[in-house]
Length: 294
Figure 1: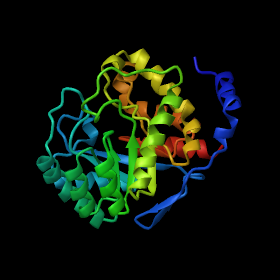
Figure 2: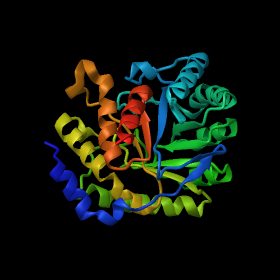
Figure 3: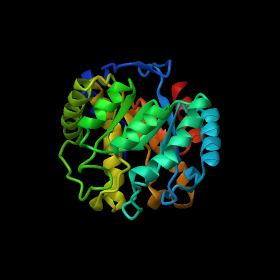
C-alpha cells in the first residue's frame, strides 16, 4: 500500500533532486514553462493493431478530426504513430509509415497543432519533419543518424528508454535494484549523443508502456511503473523535462480501463512529470487541474 510515509521517505532521501529545475524551451513559437506547468500530449494511432480503440484512426480525415478534438480538450501536443508497439502487431515498413503519417502531419500542422511523430526509422523521421512535425517521439536506441536529422530541423526529441535496438525488438526487461540509476546512465549517454548532433530540445521518457516479455505479470509490471513514476523527480537532475506515457493496468481496472491513465497521472504528477502522454486527454487534464489548486 502506498502511504504518505513512503512519499516522505522518497523526498527526504533525494531532496536536492526534488528542487532541480529543467530546461524550458519553445516549440513552434510556443514556450513550454515546464517548471510551473506540465503539458499534455494526446495520442492518435494510425495502426489497426493498436488496442486502445478510441485512439485508432484509419483515415487521414478521421485522424485530423481526432487531433482537433484532442487540442480542444486540452492537448498541448498531438502524437501520431503508424506502427503499434504490441508484440504481435504487424511491422510497418518505412514506405507505408510515410504514406499514413505524412498527410496527417501536414494537415494537423496546417490546423496549428504541435505534432509529434512516433517512430525509430530515419527515413520516416526526415519525411515527417519535412511535412511539419515539430517533435520526434523516438522509440529506438541506435539513434546517431536520427539525432542529426532532428538537429538539422531544429526539432525536439523525446528520448525513450529502450532495452533493445527499438521498441519492437525487446525481450526480457533487465531490472535494477535502483531503476532510476539505470535510467540516469542511459539518458546521460543519449543526451550527450543528441546534443553533439545539434539537438537542443530534449525530453526523456522512461518507456513504461513497452511490452517486455517478463512484464506480462500485472503485479510485477504495475509495481515497476508506480516505482518509476514516484521516483521520476530524480531524473530532473539531468536538466531536461520528463515525459511519461500513462499505462492502462487493464487487469485491475477492467471495464473501467479508461480511468487507468488518469489514475496513473496522479502518481506521475507527484513524481514531477513534465509531459503526460495519454489517450484520455480530457480526464487527465481534469486530474492535473484538480491537483494544481492545492
